[in-house]
Image 1 (cartoon, rainbow, N blue to C red):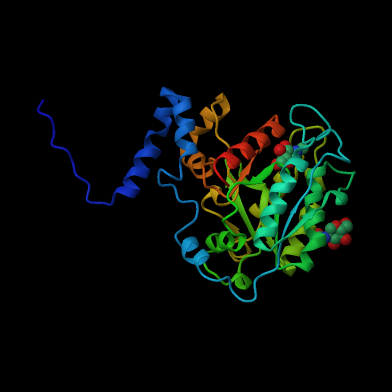
Image 2: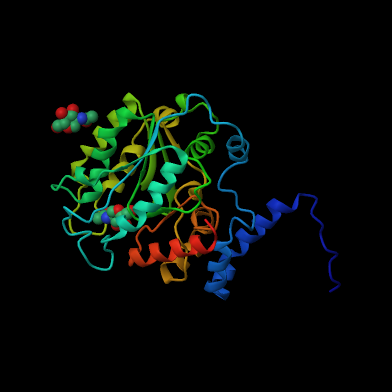
Length: 312
Ligand SMILES: *[C@@H]1O[C@H](CO)[C@@H](O)[C@H](O)[C@H]1NC(C)=O
Ligand SMILES: *[C@@H]1O[C@H](CO)[C@@H](O)[C@H](O)[C@H]1NC(C)=O
C-alpha cells in the first residue's frame, strides 16, 4: 500500500500538541511510568494552562482598590489527635512546623494574614473536621479565607490569591463572586484546599457542614469531612450551586498532587488521563498537596529543597 501523504493541520500547534499528549498519556504509562512522571512534572512547560489567560492580564495590573482582606488558615493535626496524626507512616508530626515558614513567608510577601488555627481543634471529632470551626470563627474578620490542609506547600509564591480567585470565577469583581471556590480530583470535590468568601451563605454552609454528624468516621484514613462536603454540594439545587459554588476546571490552579510511579497512580493515569493531567503537580504550579501520601515530612523536605535549588 502506498503511504498516505501526511495530513497537515491548519490549527495552531498549541492545542494539537496538548491533545496529542493527552491521547498518548496512557500509552506512555505502559511504556514507561518514569517517562510519564517526567512529562507530568513538566506539564506546564508542555503547554498545560492551570490559569486561563485572564490571570496574566490581571496580575500585571495594580490590585483593585480596596484590596480584599484575605487570610490563609491552616493547622496541624499533631496535638489533640485521635487515631490520626499521632504517629505511623501517614503522620503529620513535624509537618506543620516544616510548612509553616513557607506559608508565613508567602502571606507576608503578599500582605495576607496567616492564621495557625491549631488551638481550635475539637477533640470530639477527628481533627480534620475542625477546619470547619477554624474557618467559621475567622470568617467575619476577612473578605476571603483560604483554607489549606497541613500537608500543602506554596510552590509558586509569585501567584496571588486574588489572581487565583479571578481565574476561578472568571471575572475580577470578587465582591460579586460565588462564596465557595474548590477543586476536583479523582474522587470529586476535595476539601483539603478551598476558599470561602464572607457571606451569610458561607456561614450557613459551614454550620450545615459541621452538622453532618453521620459522616464522622474514627480510626480510618478518611475522617468523613470530605464526604460530608461533597454530599452537601451534591444536594444543592442547581441554581444555588451555580450562584454560590465554583469548581475550578483545572485542579492545578491551586491544589496539585504529586504524580510518581505507583500502581495506584498508573491506574489513575490510564483510567482518568484528563483528571491526572489537570491535577498533577508541575513546576510553576501554585500549591502542592500531599493528599493521601505517606512520609509527608520527607515529601515536604524534598519539595522545599527542589524549590530552593530552582531559585524560588
Ligand atoms: C446545626 O445544629 C445545631 C444543633 O443541633 C442547630 O441549633 C443549628 O440550627 C444547626 N444549623 C444548621 C445550619 O443546620
Ligand atoms: C486529614 O487531612 C489530611 C490532609 O489532606 C489527609 O491526608 C488525611 O488523610 C485526612 N485524615 C483523615 C482522617 O481524613
